[in-house]
Image (tube, rainbow, N blue to C red; front, side):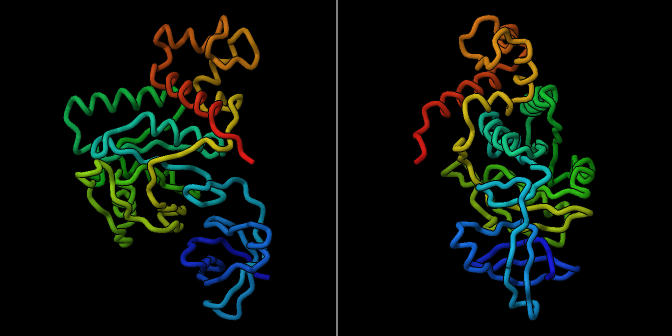
Length: 293
């Protein structure tokens, strides 16, 4: 049986890329029965009499999967956040980073719309970029208008399956249009009334860019920690995890425990205040979420 990769899912059809051609498939009923939904990024076994009447028979084991956006087997997440319009949000970025870290996906922070920043805003963004780089993250400052940072972005994409994710209106589609102009992906302005972007991407699709595959995904602005336990959150903040090795008590949650290296770094200004405060905020959210049944 032929094998391939799902590169697009739309209206109940799954488009499988195999041997340099695209085959339109449906999922077998067994997937619904077993509550398994084929995802973009899945490696599958299928059968097809022609290019429009195929059926997916088997989904290979996934190395990871995301729910929002629905995609599997991702190598890296390119987290696209705008410097302005909408304003850069460390709280939202940290929320994305936690979920990406939890799913063992390598993150790349990409800050867009640098051409729209004032000198004061530029200085502020550079300071945030420095904080995240010290935490161990790669950060790129980009502009779809001036092509700033585009050449630096391309090597990250080569040979990888990357998901572009971030809040609506930050310029994901604009960035993809610069990377591959023939795409002509629809873009839209920020809603003046809501102060955030209007959704322009309606489905998940893997696109060939350079020598890699990139997923443009529907924008969204809320994420919940439904799977992460309190004891695991520590591992989703690399700099906090590194500091925790010096805590007196194993399993320290860095709240009120004595001789906590994380709290000491926060109090001494060595750990950015917003990173520690977001950690505490997320920890409280996890502890107080409703139990799943």
